[in-house]
Image (cartoon, rainbow, N blue to C red; front, side, top):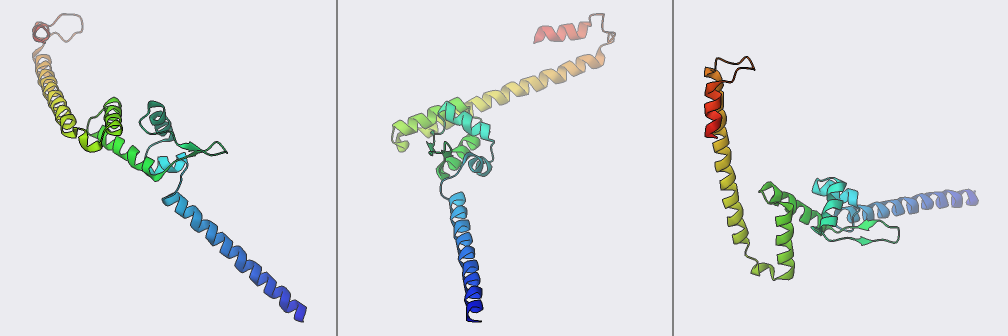
Amino acid sequence: SDLKEKIVCIKSCSLIIRLTLYLTIRCITDLEASGGKMRIGQIAKKAEVNIQTIRFYEREGIIKLPLRLASGYRDYSEQTVEVIRLVKKMQNLGFTLKEIKDLFAKAKHQNPKGVDFDEYLQKKTAEIEQKIESLQKMKQNLRQLRAAFDVCVCLDGTTPCPEIAEFTKKL
């Protein structure tokens, strides 16, 4: 009877120890995934990019190469997620990867406050305004071409249309 109680106690203690170990390991894993070191898949998921994008950014020097563990796995920090998100935001604003890389390089080699971000933003704004102007001209030309097609009576595919020929001379 005394032996049976000890066995029950050992089994329940064993269960408590295993449960404690499990919960501790779970907690450590969750901490690592949320703020500690991460693997490439975790980084990709958090930054909302694919793994190939991260590897491309590494090859291009946009993000720094992570430490490699003895197992060969790359060990990324949370900061990598923020850098990738910044790159994606800058791309959405019209910056090319080359421009982003150049800007990062300047900020790395200088005091970041010494980099004239306003100059970059003004230059990009001017480029976008030029693109808008160019796109508006294209839109106008397409409308004129559509109008030329509407009045053209030679849509048989073989006879040259004088209205369209005249329009294309203006382009």
